[in-house]
Every structure is written in structure tokens, then in C-alpha cells.
Length: 162
Image (cartoon, rainbow, N blue to C red; front, side):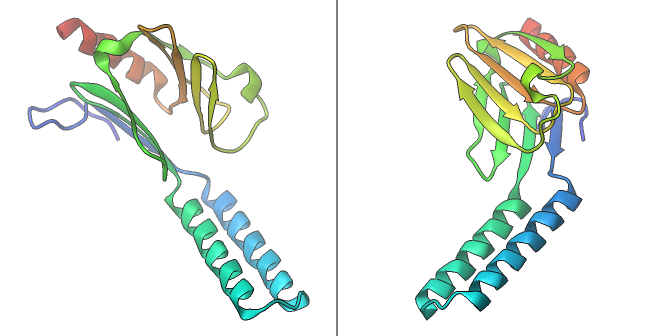
């Protein structure tokens, strides 16, 4: 979902990406089967069985809650790989933005991750297109987006008005 900015503080750009429903279903079924086999074949005290059950519920909840959200408003760009905290980048800190077709190390890679290297943070949701943000302090942020050209076109417009 995306649209034009309005005076009430609504986002100029908003996008939410979720893991593939098929992947989530397969992981949940696999986790349930593994836990069921462990509980049936390994003699464990009831406390350990309860802990395994709670762990399974937590795993399923994390899969269900996983999403990557990008929101651009008049003040900052907000990135959130739920269930982790939001990272807010004020527009004044963005020196430039460009699109990229794919991460060189992401070709053929699957999964979701936040990777940190010296000077670079990568929000990886697939091997597809995305945006590279250059920050004024020399660091960079790479993120995937279904609409990278639109996001990049909105960032400079926001900065020129300031």
C-alpha cells in the first residue's frame, strides 16, 4: 500500500512484506512433527515437555508475527523487521538513495534476516530488487522493496523541501 502524503501525518510511502504462506505452513508443520516425535520417543519429565510446548508456541508465533515494514513520512524513514524494534532514520541523515537489482551475495539465498557488517546494515527479505540508502555519516542501509523506484523517487523529493 502506498499513496500521497496528507496533512494528518500519514505515511507518504508504506509497504509491508510477509514471508510466503507456504513457507510458514511448511515450517510450522515440520516443527510440530519434530516436537511430537521428541515427546513420543524421548522420556522426559512433565516440566521439560511443558517447556518444549511453550517453545513450539513461541516459534509458531514468531513465524506468524514476521513482517518487514517500510514507512516514509515527512520526518523519517521507519524500517521494522517484526518482531524486532523499529529503526527510524531521519530524512536529514539520508545523503542519497539508489535502486539495486539484487544483492550480490543474495542470489539463490532464501530467508529473512537483518545482517550487520561494519558500516552496512542489510534488511534481507529475498534476493530481488531493493534500495541502497547512503547515510551522511558514511554508513549504508540496504533493504528489499517491491517498489524500489517509487521509494527512491520519494526520498529526494522529501529532502529538497526541507
